Length: 320
Image (cartoon, rainbow, N blue to C red; front, top):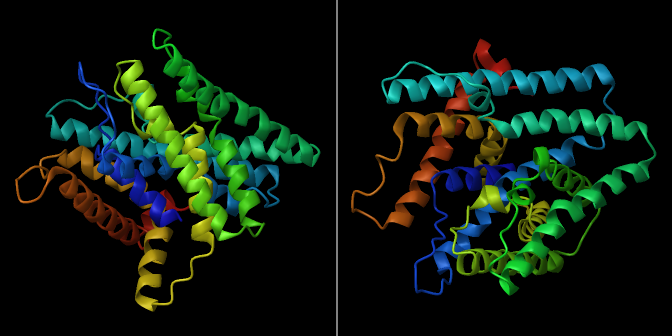
């Protein structure tokens, strides 16, 4: 699950999502664009996997704070490094700002989710599910309602705060969903239904926004707090939970990627900051095939760099 999530994140950052509006044309997503909607499950799958591994653990306050501080330290350190990488690439002085230090925002989100979950665990168990339901209504269901409203009346503008998500709190929905799904057996047929429903909802959102708002769809970041991404993530989680790879070599490779998921998240962005997109578009392959192949290469290369650093004294910068 972590391996697939890592690849989806890399693929999204290569910019495979291109949902553009063209004057006078009614936009329908192509097959490649439809498949690229699965990249909106990348970060949600990370959240769900982390929830499955951590939500039900009994952390004391000191251990929770240490875990959160370590996440923040890792995010700040690599955030500064990536700003230096951009400075080298564009031949300018390093500029570190508060926004740039949030480059690895996912790690900051995990940090305060761990703290929030600690305090929720001090309360009756039902409080956690009240939190889950409240966040499910806002922003997930409210975002879907906005899609329907825009589809009916294109003159109404969609509020950006709904899709951005207040302080990325929507991540808690994925974490609690991951915890629940990890401890309950659900038929695999349900996973297929969830994926198809999620894909249909995501396609509806793209068509509504692009055609009726005359605005480009913002891609995976925009889609994280939506019912489409939620259903696809739940479906993939259920399906992946039941996967048992028989081939030892494949199992080792997937385990290698999964154990280096944090490193893939960090280093693919660092590699892209240094290289940009100069490798894309040399005419040997189509643009989208080139992107997918490069995403595979960057995923494996980032995992190798991560694995190498984890064997050095700097391993604390990649260890949670």
